[in-house]
Length: 323
Image (cartoon, rainbow, N blue to C red):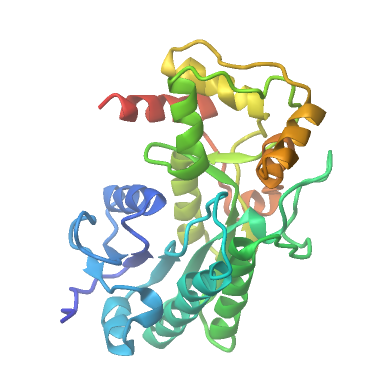
């Protein structure tokens, strides 16, 4: 049974609070003196005083009502994580359940509870997988998701807008690029482990531009989205101060870990050919291609600026590995 939490003003509900971003954001908000209701799938290993609701797409209306009662804002982080190696026909169904249906239920519960502000963590993949030189993705670009994950995030944005229509709840959507920080999983974790193992990576000849955001800068962005007056409604991108190339990212990781830079200069056409021959063409295209975002609208609406450098964030990653 879910027990009704004690109510306070400025209370923020954070879903997905046991995840990589969620843990950091809950810690940041509590350090700022906010009351946080950390909503998780299961209580084991979750932040202190978490509310375990199981799968959000299956949570009962009564349990959701208790979790959101009296809350002022929601940061919705829960959803199926993106994995480049995912395959299979069931992925669309899983992304729809874990991302779209869960977002719709959370948004409806938030509206019923009188929540004033809803911040959704979405993805740059709503817009696509690559950008042209000098043409970063902007918030008003038409969505063009290329996989189930991107389509799920696009449809979650639509579900949120539909639930909030005709309500007084302000909706803020942050489309995130690659997030780097302690505890990052997936592609970031694999790249850090490869560099740490001093494996030679064939990325030296790549000349691309990819937006990233450090975890600490991202937490600052969520705080800005919660506190800006008026609320920065609509879709925005957030990113660190400048894009980084794939080889520059590898060099930065190596510098943070204190190891030699494991780069080999393999011509990009040869890399792409190898990708096609091994069935990993899409993955190689992502590594070689550019993916930039324009965060000017969010900066203008909130005054937010990314104050920490990539090297500072990677130093935190290296320190966490040494614990």
